[in-house]
Length: 376
Image (cartoon, rainbow, N blue to C red):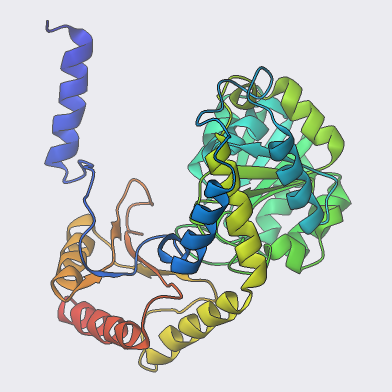
């Protein structure tokens, strides 16, 4: 049956295909991985796998499914104990688990700000934060990326309760937020700071907020487990008051089936493994330094402190072509296209990992410079 809705759906898909922007689900190729978020290599760690399987064997009596939301039948002593452990490790009063970072951001920003309040977000913030803001009745304004003057201008005009949302490490650019300065600004204007640490947790200790000693000055910290821990889910860290509020008013938490026990057990095992293997973070920093050293002096590629290295190559067609040429050399580096990033800011998003060999990193740098110079 053809109707107006199906015609519109088809038209939008055809238009996207004509623009070369049609998304498709890729299958993994046997290439050197410079694209995934598996920064510490946990997804392929044989010692961690052995620990997870052993832990599962020790809990064979546990159910496969959560059977309901945590407000119904999905809660457990194990889940609450895990939250308490996460809170203690990060030196906060309380923690609340969510099924994903996306869900956690939806919960925070749809339930906390009220009509008449203000949410100030960095212009490069995660889409999940933007979508959460859209579900609230608060006013939403953006400040220029990592720009303290722009943030202060917005703080001066904020009305009602003011929430400021940033990432500590930005997912598409790989740069770090000026946490100390932003925290001080928020404090001086009475704004509540929420920090998304999805790409910092496990890479920089327990996250940059914890590392900087700012835990007591930040209203809420969000940590996801799908990156450094190679697991699934997220946790919001903060006060007992915040936890109680989210349990009562955050619809994505209230109406979601809880994570199954197997997921919780993997999280606990991976978190303990992270604490026992801090040297992996040092190894990752060594790989990042090697990447920086392997770029020729004066290269237009600006190396960053984080494992995410954004290489701006304007134009969707051009960046896709360079990505294909890298794949032909056995290197998986995926292009990030507009409109995911602003037009003219299309890029290769290089992700470095502990398991990338020194030879592959050196090959990547050499090939990158050669291919980019060819297309100048």
